[in-house]
Image 1 (spheres, protein in one colour):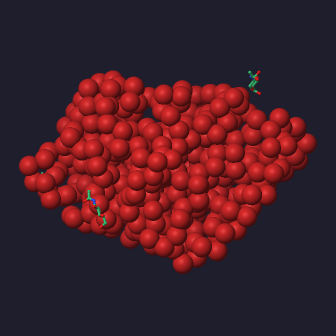
Image 2: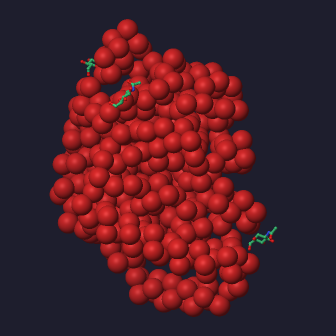
Image 3: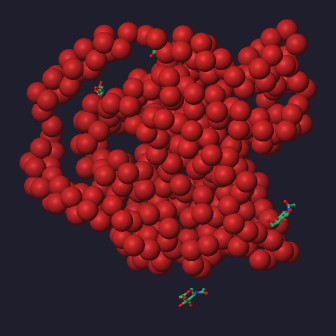
Length: 378
Ligand SMILES: *[C@@H]1O[C@H](CO)[C@@H](O)[C@H](O)[C@H]1NC(C)=O
Ligand SMILES: *[C@@H]1O[C@H](CO)[C@@H](O)[C@H](O)[C@H]1NC(C)=O
Ligand SMILES: *[C@@H]1O[C@H](CO)[C@@H](O)[C@H](O)[C@H]1NC(C)=O
Ligand SMILES: *[C@@H]1O[C@H](CO)[C@@H](O)[C@H](O)[C@H]1NC(C)=O
């Protein structure tokens, strides 16, 4: 397995660096229409981010609670052109608005305000990619809306190629990309059928060319029946009809971890893993045993802890990540999102199905992206 991964990441790094240098030197001569505004902005932001760096050293931003803040949401979802029918809650009739008004308040510090112009300026000429399932798609769209709200008149173009969708903020040369992958590891079509290969990861070639990558996988590991997109699972030499799903998840994630260790160049690429995104179908978890979905939820849970604690998979994630030698940041959104039983589309989507897995846009994932921003500027 190790040799498979290593082989798949031995391309010409030096050539790529030369290409990158050429790209950067080209960009620094490019003119930018927002130039004057930007100069004064940058002064303020530099002070903001210095303050933030000082503060952050003693602060776990993932420990905190949700507080009402009238300046939220950070944008009007009706003005965002990127939202898919699954997540566009207001458009599909969601009547309550409290869920839009909550800000995440860490216990020991304040998060920096999300600033799209600063985000795009810092990432000038770079590529940021979400890799994962529909929760990644959901977060990608939230980030696009946040950025679009900051630069509503800028030139944004779209490119789709196979598993990759890119939105390119042309005035900054920033690509905000999505790579769809349910499991991170491969599924291959073989004579016996579709095989989920826990030891094989072949898409990394593209991922390691990114400047920032945010990975996620979880939603699909317990899928079975007609929704399961594989027929067999391969674990080492054994080809099995099925196996313990949590064990499969751990093995798949470990293959990804090995790929990070052997293939990622940490001076080029910042690697982030998005923690387990919780769903809300089981009211026992929040002390309302008769509740079986999020359909009537309009308020977050008060305080900092979720009655049932973390899901098992969150421990697997922490355990596997702790074995990676290269720097990987855990975007640890599990607990803060568990508190947001009110944040899901429920039936306010184009399909009217009860969805307590994904998140309304605008909404909870804007905070995930705010936390992502806070990490990137620290
Ligand atoms: C947007 O950028 C693309 C790529 O640089 C360019 O071809 C296109 O003409 C631009 N559109 C506008 C409206 O400026
Ligand atoms: C699409 O992706 C493939 C594989 O990464 C690449 O070879 C091809 O050039 C891409 N096509 C476009 C139009 O970008
Ligand atoms: C609901 O959550 C409780 C508490 O975590 C757990 O004991 C129970 O098994 C869950 N029920 C279902 C149907 O998953
Ligand atoms: C949440 O907790 C705060 C502080 O303990 C309290 O003032 C507030 O009334 C609580 N809200 C709800 C809805 O329970």
